[in-house]
Length: 71
Image (cartoon, rainbow, N blue to C red; front, side, top):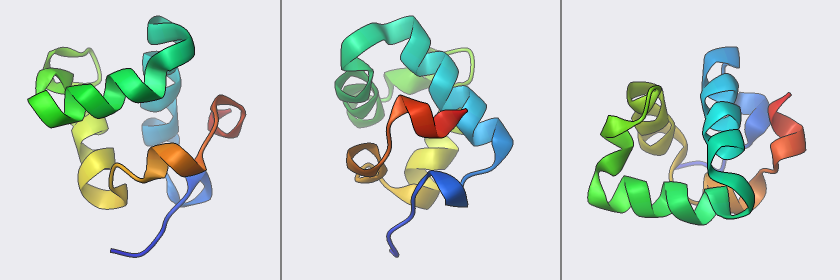
């Protein structure tokens, strides 16, 4: 899998990550990573898009992006 970043994401994907981050506060990346591991991301309002991000960009994307890049 090639390294990707926020510029490789669709507007829908960025919006889904931003919404998740705003709901989950300071540790949103840690919470999303855990949700991807245990499958609880499916219960989120934008669960399908969050899973798509994991499948296309990989969990390591979380180390390369910040909330400011999701505008």
